[in-house]
Length: 129
Image 1 (cartoon, rainbow, N blue to C red):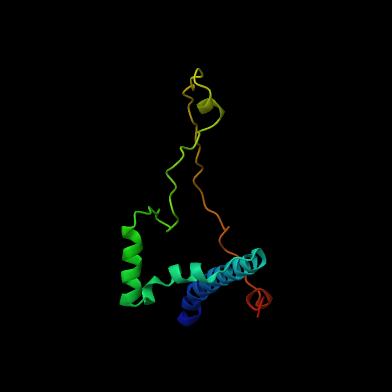
Image 2: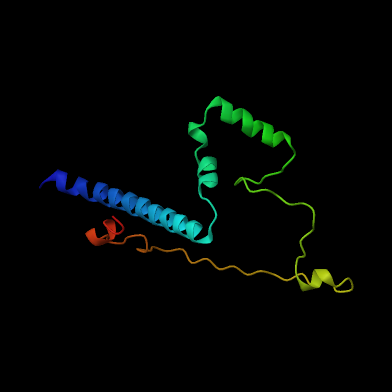
C-alpha cells in the first residue's frame, strides 16, 4: 500500500481545476481584447481601473478628485445615469393597469453531480500559445 498515490489524486485534481479556471480567464481576456480592438475603442483605460493595487499615491489622489466631482458609480466602477427613470415593462407605461401579484414556485433537487469534473487535455492547455 502506497499512501503517496492516494494523496496525489486530490492534489492533482485541484491543480487541474485551477489550471482550467485560469485558462478560461485568459481566453476570455484575450477575446475581449480582440473585440475591443475590432470595435476601435482602447482597452488601456479599462486596464488602468483593474490595476488599482499597484497605483501610486498620485494616481490615488486623482481618483479621489474624480470621486468628488459628483459622478456616481456602482460596485463595478460603471457610471450611474440617474437622469431618466427606467420603465419596468409595458404595464408601467400604462397608468390604468394594475399588476397582479403572482406566486413564484421554485423546486430544488438536492443531489450529487459530476458536472465540475472535466478531464483537461494537453491540447486544451496549450490552446492559444
